[in-house]
Image 1 (spheres, one colour):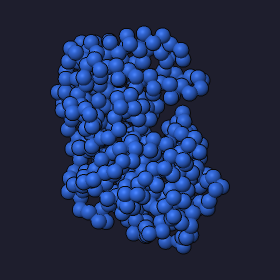
Image 2 (cartoon, one colour):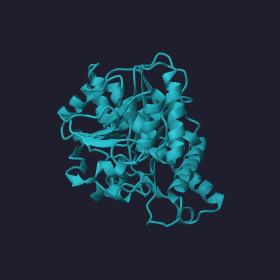
Image 3 (cartoon, rainbow, N blue to C red):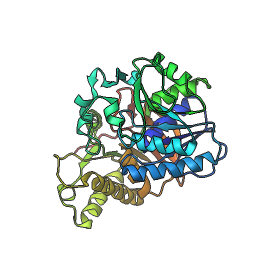
Image 4 (cartoon, rainbow, N blue to C red):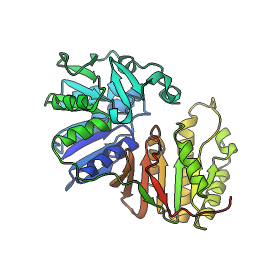
Length: 389
């Protein structure tokens, strides 16, 4: 068995989609349990938004429990642009695993994300000049990978694959093409943890298994479908336009809920009832969060928790059959509200867009997408009901 620790849910799902391509058995869990009859076990640690100390303790616990199951290796799935508590989590995993070093390959050339001379670029644009600079939780103000990850607790270096590498510490690999990914994968040994994006994991998996399944972007929507666009990235605008043009109802979060920390609980109940009324008439609904920036401390967390509560209300009353969620933190809150801890990836629509079945919800299909990824035109939605709105 191969184990993967992901720092957020959409990252875990993304890896699950990659595993499906190799015809392997995969399950995603939110906590480590004894697993049998699975080739890849993915743990959603949900640590990205935690404090460094909280993330460190959680990774220590998860790593210890995973090692008890004697996996072939534990891959650490990181955010592709290195947001989160990268160094603290990797140091914790190295300490528990008795490993000397970690090779971090965050770049993914197939997505236009490369690291050259220690500088991160997204489609030729320096990382600090992209929308990641406005991330509400982890605003990235530099394109230097050393400045992003450096924390003073261990050696951190940026290297090319043909340079001499230190025997300990964190090594951030420069990657400009797929061949670089393969060369970095080939030097992973028993004393080294492999960490980084899903593209690097794909290459590592491909060194042992044959890829047999391709992505399928066709989505047949059921009558009871809810879209939740909870991320702060601008990539969802086009898909919302596409869906609205097909007659799907768009419902933005009510102003009183967004602007008032102590809003009347009846507001969310009323909002949920309105959504349910549409769904019961076989109309599909988009939930969005589109308002100007607020200075309220902890607003992002409050809104995610509110959206999760809303989805719980809607599902209890309408029994959703399709739930599409954008954004890892939003997904995690919704899963908690529905008491879902185990999911089975069943289909990759496109890179990072994964459909799953959830334990305890036999009639519900959950599809997730990282907030920073765009909905590609290859994903086609069928059976969309046209309504007047």
